[in-house]
Amino acid sequence: MSTLTVSNISDATTTVGTSYVVNGSAKAWANFNQIGTQSIRDSFNISSITDTLTGSSSFGVSSSFSNTNAEVTGGSTYINNNWRFSPRSRLTATSTIEFQVANSAQTLADADQNSFSAHGDLA
Amino acid sequence: MTHGHLWDRLLEAKSRLEPVQSKYRVLFEDPTAPDEPAKVLVPDPNWMACALAGGILPPINTYQRDRDVPDGEPKEHPYAEPIDAMTEEEAIEYLVMKDIDPAVWRDYQGNRTILKIVPVELIPSDRSFRNAWRVVQ
Image (cartoon, rainbow over all chains, first blue to last red):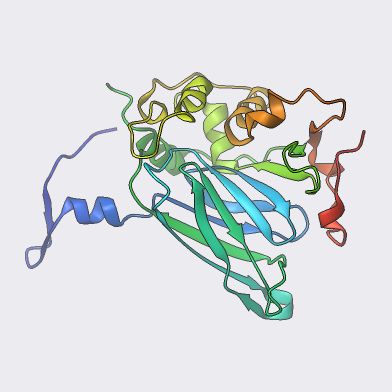
């Protein structure tokens, strides 16, 4: 693997520092299913998913974040019932992401289409 | 150091390795929360591909030492020299030690069996009573 060390990237009109690209990239993400046996469809920088409860999943991160202040954004849908959920997702440790889905009654519920991405500084 | 950062190795590996769905699941209970149902750990397919390929993941003891490193302080595992390829069984054991609390796999001294590595077929697909699951004794 070759390394290109540059401070800025330009398209001849606009120039941005490479730190914008590095800091702005998602450091971990996953697309997963909670129905049946919970499973990951695709991901990056994730080592495992743990089915902890109905509607609740926990993820191991391979390359840890430097602190738990990283931002985690997620979304969920249950296609069959046309439900759309707003999950709660956050880092509970520098190498653990928690993801919980609640339905309109604020009860934890499984969803089949879930995803999140996490941005922050790596350790 | 020629091996670079773990995140960079994972990025490079994702571009060339096919994901591997494990045939194993890890069923466990948390001894510090005995009223909670059993949990089921599923290996990530991309991570499993890295484990089987070798030359990407750091030694497991670097993760264990990093558990004691305060937030914001430099951690050892991203820069550690990668280990060789593992078998799927070794990879599952590695994952148990990485992603499950030591209170489950190292410190527990009770009589109940609280951790089992099982084939995926033994995990129920019917989730009607998900919050009542326990590890069968």
